[in-house]
Length: 432
Image 1 (spheres, helix red, strand yellow):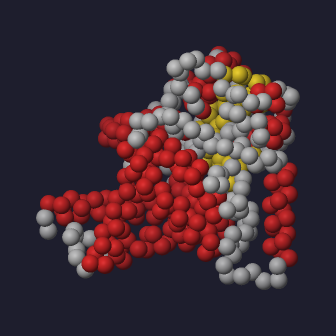
Image 2: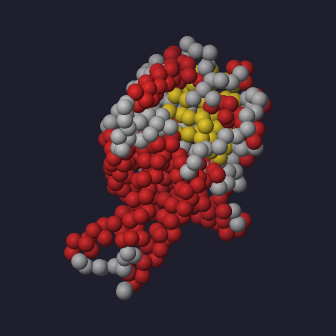
Image 3: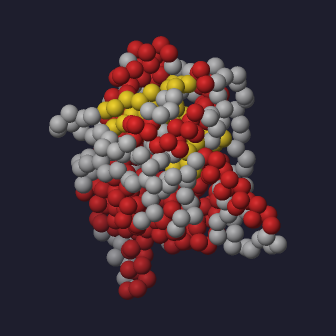
């Protein structure tokens, strides 16, 4: 044992405690998700859709939002045509929706948080006077028709910041989109639903989230990072405002099909995550120490998650090196302590698919796709740390021109084809 061995041993203790912590929490994600009591429509909503050159998909979302199962007089849809050079604003103008055209001044930063800021400023005092909450969707999304009804239930219940279930619009396109879908099904249960049941804080996920307008009076909208959702969640935690989870309302997000596009998107996420971690983890830990706020401590743990992933990757590299060369350069915990946490998490992916997915997936295939996405995340997390100051926003191309009716019809056809199969093979997830 030398000084490096002691340091590495301390890091392994941290990994075992943090990994074991997430593992224990995940058990609270099993079983049927409970529903909040149904409340009569009461809350008034502003639905914001920031869109940059989204002429291929914007009409489908607006039509979808106009058909929500909620009184039309209680919500307004607003499309923010953000620095568009295509027909996004013109297409949005055909509908009964407010269209704000935002053009950045020379030298100004661009991206989703700035578009949202522009819209909130344009509504000004009217936002607080005429609306109880605002919701945010990406232009490529589709959403279940019960979305505003569920948000109304949460707001009436006293929740002030709510994230709905994050689903995939195109899980079956290829192994990349299936990897995304499997990862989201896992996180929605093992992390979001589990923490909600335990009364811990959730995280907003960039789209499908709802904010009580009174929160803006306390926190404002000052996010400027590549991951405005994580930054806003953290800012709310520092004010003692907890994010909650709605398992009953879903937003369907289009995932990139190409590996290159997925790498660009995930690199943006990791840069943003490191940026928020470096700027806010100290403040969260200070709040935990001075106020005993467990939600702040839990938020700090999540911000440190990329560091945990890199350390885990380093541990596995050392294990492989030790196995190949029979040389234990550092003190390593026994493999039986590490392996179950990794293996069981992939079994959880299969369970989450079975419990929540609206289509059938081959179990082995989804595990391999999720594993591939996770492994390829590791170099992106490292490069994101090295370049976390780069806040250049690169959009993800969207092209899935389908309506919510098309999506629902496709899901029904998949379910019906599954029912007509004479036998279910062991390698298939069961349709929820």
